[in-house]
Image (cartoon, rainbow, N blue to C red):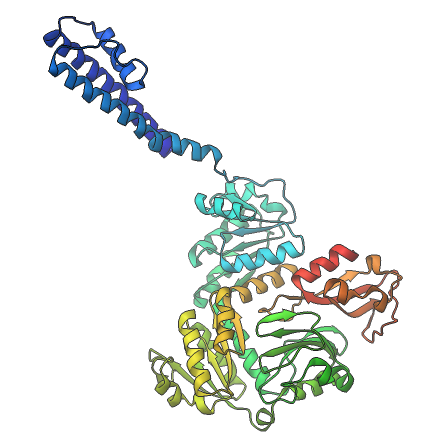
Amino acid sequence: MDTWQRRTVYYGVGVVVLMLIYALVYQQVTAVFEPETYTFVQSLQFIVETFTATGYGSHSPWESTVTNLVVMVMDISGVLLIFLALPVLLFPLFEETISTTPPTAADEIEDHVVICSFSPRVDMLTDELEVFDVPYVVIEPDRDRAVELIEEGIEVVHGDPESMDTLEAVNLESARALVADVDDSTNASIVLTAKAADPDVRCITFVEDPDIASYHRYAGSDHVFSPRRLIGESLASKVTTGITAEVGDAVEIGEDFEIVELPILAGSELVGETIAESGIRERTGANVVGAWFRGEFVSPPSLDARLDEQTILLVAGHERQLEPLKEMTLSDKRRRRRGHVVICGHGEVGSTVRERVAAEGVSCTTVDREANGGVDIVGDVTEKSVLQEAGVEDASTVILALASDTMTIFAALVVRQLNPEVEIIARADQTESVRKLYQAGADYVLALATVSGRMLASTIFEEDIISYDKQVEVIRFDAGSLVGETLAGADVRAETGCTVVAVERNGEVITELGPEFEIRDGDSVVVAGPDENITEFAARYE
């Protein structure tokens, strides 16, 4: 019996008992103070008429003041009980009638992803799944939260993700993967239940504490991700790529042909030039697929778009083309020295960054509020004196790996004021903080939810992506309706915002694609672009 039903029973019983008591009181009062007497049934009828407002005055007038006072009390009680019934009974009944009831099963779904509980990183994953038209279902144990998700357009089933019945109700045996993102202990329990229901299902779990990852694997998890370690490694890769002359974060398309992102550093020869003025294509042969301008991705970028130290280019080409382009993105200062790195924060993220950066032989200083192994300077990173002691004014890169987005934003402002030329790479917990960090002066921002969600999608699809922090895909499609078209005639970039970077033909990857290149039957095209543009490409040409 739910709350509303229990409340209704109590209300009904209370009203009946009160009416019986009032009937008895009315019978006794009229017998003593009035010339006319009534039976108990007649008295009860009068009380019912009074409470329901259908028979006022049937026994009036009364001669006694006492009787009139008693009747007045009964009248007021009846009206109050009627008004009380509205918020207590009728309104909840109306809400329950019109409210969404979350389903408890999704047994007709197949080749889907079962997601146990909803989180920001799962939000990113569902976006990825929808782009590729992969069905999914989220198991949410909280009913109210399940209703909210349904109203947001998320496919949800209300149930206990640790229950065998719930997993069977979402057709786990036909799922391509299960993702558990509740908490460390619950995730392990979910995997045990899932493997009991279907030993072959692929299970992916998250752990906040990397030390217990082995327990998840023992429970049967096929992939265990530690989001903070993951973003730490991503931050470190930006540092090591930025301070060396090597091309990193590349997706290999064919032999010696890659798609890569290249950050333009302060002081490089490209800063201040438009894409047309830079002559990248003419000077290196590399093709600019897209670019991030202060955190916003544009594909294809306008030839009039101006490059600055916060621009990141997405380019495709052979290694012999990408290496000289990488040199063009570096400043003379960066070419002469590897630089010093200041790491603000020494939690799971910061310690991972330090480990990776130190392994590259790069000098680094770590700052944290608490003294522990690996912390060089103890203090508040939002204070100038602490940052000056850490050498921020002479550093080449500052990594902000703080637990609070608010503190990270403020620290970015302080660092930028101390050293306008330093490269600031920041970690953000919430995706909505990314834009603020760019406005505060950060050169590169990684959102924890985005990195985790992209890693999930990459694992499920078993496909390469440019990097886990950007919404860009490199996908192979059958030529479809492009067969017989030339690249100039199809004008794929103008129509969809995607770029055809290569064509696979008879087992060979063709990367030298001129405007008159004609796509033939049996070809596969390799396309790069943002998620939404990839979706548009698939809808138009497949």
